[in-house]
Image 1: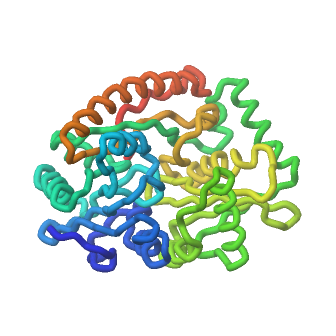
Image 2: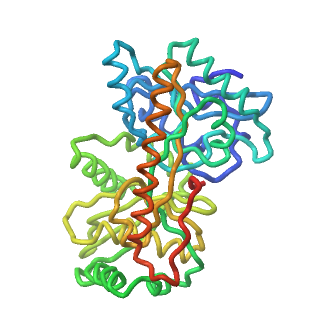
Length: 377
């Protein structure tokens, strides 16, 4: 095994799947255009096994921004005990809280969990990294490493699943009457404001659309007192090389763009990533980020829609609570044990929270889906 400092050094044949956010072209666009580098606190540090033909999208981090598995309290606890939580190693899709493969390999590749775990843990010890964190991993990776002295941390997201709907009206027909009327009213308000919706791919973007999109992207972050992590040129390069997996949905009023949302898709799933607007229109966020995505999945027979992290308002619109999974290892034995106890207690609370969210779904009793227990793939 070896550690690579650039994704360019990794052979392209490793990438066999369609999950977008760990594709070589996606990470390469971030590397080459200033989104991930030493200055931004994302040091590329990929674990590559030539003999077994797999790679981990791993990074040495000097902060916890852009991860969406919040460990700031862990860092504070380290500091209170005179220890350094940073640098740390994360294995993740940068800036993307979407579950998917964190081991890049052929579907038939056999990986020994103990060997992989030992390599990661030994590297952390040898290079003074406080630990390793595999964020939003899939079920296969969870099973591979969970018995290798890693602690699982769960979180709750709200996802939509396609139960063979013919169209949006068919989907709404399974709602309770009051909930259905609320959605219809929200969508009608968009029409009453004479807003036109258009979909395009990343290949169809022009310079004026890019400038408007990036203005919206940065405005959304600025409203939270932050700055967007991804540079405009990174987005453009992703579109150049993966434009067929990018979908932009635009809202126009009087032939002028007023809002947009960016989606990605793979063979099974639609991923909602970013949205922004230059005007305040009631329900426009719901239309672009939820209802349009649901319609797209039904039309294109996608089975799963991940609209992004957080947001309990998704429940009333038919998004089900599901668990996501991250795995954590800390080199300090005392803190590793403490984190293990913490995530167990946290998981108990999340089980209750998830059940409460499930009971708040808008579906009538005849259509209520079974609660999903496994982390989403």
